[in-house]
Image 1 (spheres, rainbow, N blue to C red):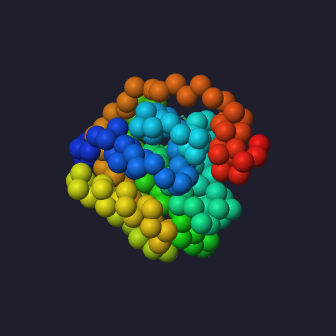
Image 2: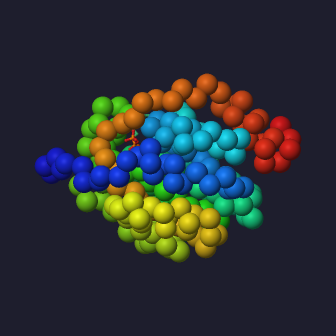
Length: 197
Ligand SMILES: Cc1ncc(C[n+]2csc(CCOP(=O)(O)OP(=O)(O)O)c2C)c(N)n1
């Protein structure tokens, strides 16, 4: 298969801001690398949990959280390759049907963090179609700014599971050093959510 050039034009920092700008009680989980930096820069908050080291785990963490906290919107923001590493999670989410879970993929059609190698989505692999086949209540691919606003609204509506693929420009963004360890993040998140360690 020949290498395809990336097709997205949305700015990843801008998309992240739209998703987390409005302060609310929603819970945010992010995937390894660039997406965590984008979301942290858009607004670090105690109800953000950055899954920094475990590629393929963000949607699973989001699912567990959504099942444990069914009255709170849970938004997973992650990369296309991060999701594809454990794509079976879409089927598990489809079985569980958490209404409060949304996944937004910042899709640059690359493994941006490790050298911009071409990823599955550059070759037409359609993550939104996979989510619909896994019985998500809604799944879209967006390329325009105006569509991103609608995605942000939908992630708060609790009529999921919902997935959006946002086609962003190729490349990576400056790292935002998240200095808290996994344990410190866990304590911060649990305190904010439950008032306990
Ligand atoms: C199990 C595992 N394999 C590989 C890596 C190395 N790795 C870190 S980030 C990354 C690419 C992530 O790509 P994507 O999720 O599309 O996000 P992008 O960097 O393009 O924004 C890879 C391969 C890892 N951390 N863990």
